[in-house]
Image 1 (tube, rainbow, N blue to C red):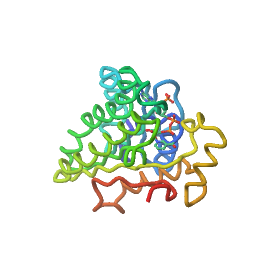
Image 2: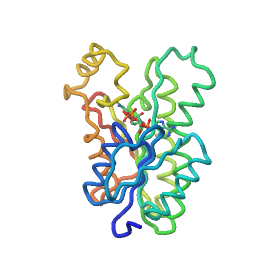
Image 3: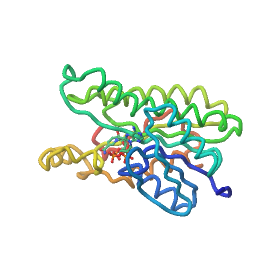
Image 4: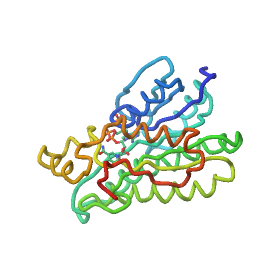
Length: 237
Ligand code: NDP
């Protein structure tokens, strides 16, 4: 068991933003366990990849037991698992609703319930969820995705109120346009238009998001809870 450092559990740590977060914490000496659905990503001595589809409660139970066996209860949870879905809202079917909500929000609900008891017991810990700026303002043709992120934001604020007295801080990072696989469905023209709308004139990187997540679990943010921190290059001001 890797006991002498803080332990962060990252859900959705195999690719993109989550892989950036796994590496960021690991490089700073944390023990990092992470969930992936299809194929593992970052590896290392202090990194434990575990296959877990967060939409399946029994898989979450089994995977969390493996996390505890290997590294003990995490001091920090970063929830990053997510899928996008584009289309006109009246073409979405109930299965789409379940898939998007269960992945983007349901998994967060399940995992928060796993980590909260030990954090409360220790009177120490923190939770950060990766939301999206579309959760704050809504996106045309991404209604389910935007709603799942709006649910994340409301849950984060509620948990912050509930857990603050127990010394647990809960925040969200709300990225703008970040250069990952999720952007692959966009054409070069669409990406150029999005960059044009971003005052800092570029797409963000997984490291831009990881640095903000790290800040929110560090002592530097000790009086910050219940906040939705935009990491969007000024896209949404
Ligand atoms: P990627 O598609 O690159 O990565 C998605 C991650 O989520 C992967 O690790 C994937 O695992 C995991 N995941 C998906 N479904 C499940 C599941 N059922 N169970 C467990 N893990 C799952 O996306 P990004 O890195 O871009 O996005 C990460 C988060 O950031 C998402 O929540 C997304 O909504 C959010 N975000 C992204 C933005 C962007 O511009 N890229 C902007 C705003 C928010 P696997 O590799 O196994 O498939």
